[in-house]
Image 1 (tube, helix red, strand yellow):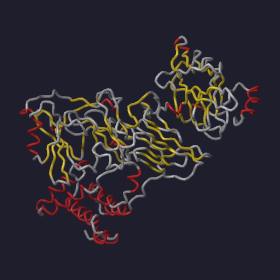
Image 2 (tube, rainbow, N blue to C red):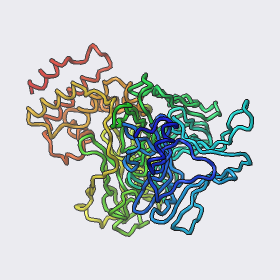
Image 3 (cartoon, rainbow, N blue to C red):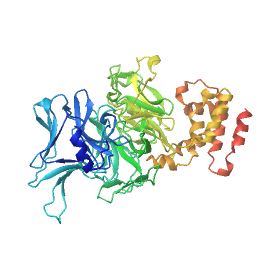
Image 4 (cartoon, helix red, strand yellow):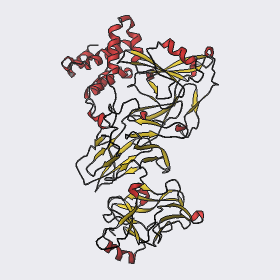
Length: 574
């Protein structure tokens, strides 16, 4: 029976054991022994009550009901937006209950703990109080107005204490934050935080007791003004409206891909995989879809693969973790714990060697930034430091120099063909070169919902790949040929997703090196560019042709770029 009007609910309650009001009055309670006793907002969209989080484990929560909104909704299959006791579930078999006491305090008792108070609002009122679930999903504890001309006073509200979700018109403030859960099935407090920092900037933080906390969005190397942010407004408030527009006091803003409709349900969640996503759902539909996300490349989320682990991502196989050569997983069931060395580290420089891992970066934990260093100088510097684990040797287009970063800890690692830079891992000389390959494992870290605003495939890339297949050269499609073509895509989509990347540096570097490279040395240059996962199994002549085509496609002068027909002709002429 529909739970839409309190008067109707009053009569339905007389013939049903269901509790379907939107209000809990003073002295009343909800119990785990009667799970159908829930508060339901007057519009039927939200419910509040005990939600199962495991075997004989329950949390007091607010969730979206699945349409149609009726009293037959299964809370365990619904979408949770708030929890009161996420880290301390109560027993379901014994009498655990939530009660609104006469002193105005809302208290959750654990029956399995002898009635121990697990959670409370810590509110006090000499006047009568009531708990109400509003139509916007806000659970409010109110003090009854004392005079007909006065208003009910809010003593406490769930909007002031978010867990991992922000609802429309629920402000994110200097005193609130969104904290991810540990996993899809474990709702306990996780490691990723969406909040304002002390500089008034909204950011994403990885906070794990095993490591120092790290900001990974916006990119840590980006200055606030380069990311379009302002530090001057100390109000620290951000709000998502019902139309799909998110605005923050630091000037960060985004618009959902389905912006403009206020008949769509929305929720912004700090997901357990470290990404912030805006989810949308039509009122008459059941499926949620992603209408915005902060990070388009999941491999750039910190902490996924732990210390000495590398994260990589592609759309076909998803996100993968791998241990660095000479390392193994600490815990085969948990990649976040990282990898440990199979060897005994040595401080003796004469007993060390370096192996190259291309297109890999470990952000942070640098001994320093040493500019315009030769590779030999960089190696010597690391060998002189007992705690140096590796060196990051990276070319910077802006200065046309290589920078050296000795690493004292290998954390926040990712590997991507869009990153131009190499990691040189320090290993004992005695370590067998035949065992220095990356041991990779698929990481089922997140079931990504359908993206409504997926970028349309670059048709030029699609055709190039098909012609490469026809030439028998699909296996030699290299990073430059694909990435460079992607470079000419409109950047609007990626920027709206929150990522700001320098897409020109690699193209400029390749162009400069081609000018300085003789025909006899082209093979050496190609080895630096080609995707290392190919293991050298490609035809050099085919690769030269693909490089030639790719560089023509990214000419600064649009008029100098080849047409699709010319690209086809160049490939067929080979």
